[in-house]
Image 1 (cartoon, rainbow, N blue to C red):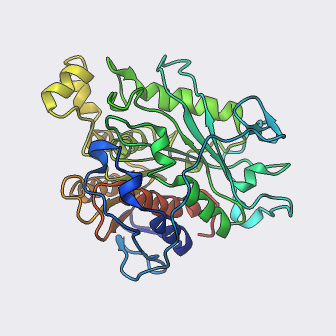
Image 2 (cartoon, rainbow, N blue to C red):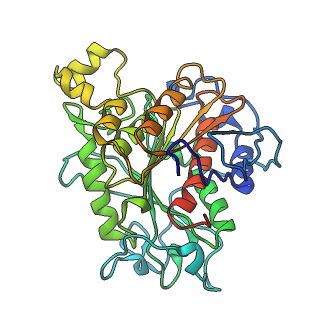
Length: 381
């Protein structure tokens, strides 16, 4: 099919509606600084875009809304857990992991499967990178909590960068647990295993997902995090089963790593990302982040990475932004066109009324995760 054709853009109503209704944005995003500017005040309603493939899907018909969700707190390790992080013993990998699986047609959930997943806090060491990362989030869907869990796909999601930013932003502002439980509810307990590592080290630090003076964030995300996942969890190994995604600075990282390492991440979700890594000005970025090496800076730009690795035989990219995000919103069609030209299968989604806020982020990530489900064998194509 043509690289300009969008396929499998299915935004499930239950997921989008649940996430949209979860927001009392004034209380959820108030502490996040620049990444959360201009958030709306009440519950937002959006609807699903389904059926006919299109280059850009936007929403217009209101969907049902739901009451505010409770903020997820630290998980208590259950009786079947191993170690202090609460990962069930049955999740420990055994034997050779499969490259990919068509679980949408083969998975039969046991009657004892839980109805919701489990959100844990885990430590992922920077063994090779020596990156001093903070506590990560780990979501295990209901299928992963069964006595004989299947090897599942993986989604690595990243927060934005601001004074107080951390992986926890995906739990509160991003409403990721609620989104994933909604997906699992309509897919027999299946979602990717989701890991939210710390790509920043501190909220105000921005290593820009490269290896440099501000920290070896790239090696941490491309080597240390996947190695930890593979040694602790039953996961599939093929690039088609791995997704990198994020919001704002995390979205920029997603296109950097998805474009630069297609053998690791076959799918990327970029919600309100930037044209490339930045510390505010080009001169400051090159000096502080790349030790004055302009060539290294230019090579780290997503457009350069896309050109260097084209053609992409199997990679897919989902881009989302708010219609009223006048700073980051215009970036989306530019990067989407570059990704499409490079051979990626591209979908874009614009949230009506959305600004650069965690309300937009939560719905954009929900839409992106819905899009990736059939790409990694968790929903019918």
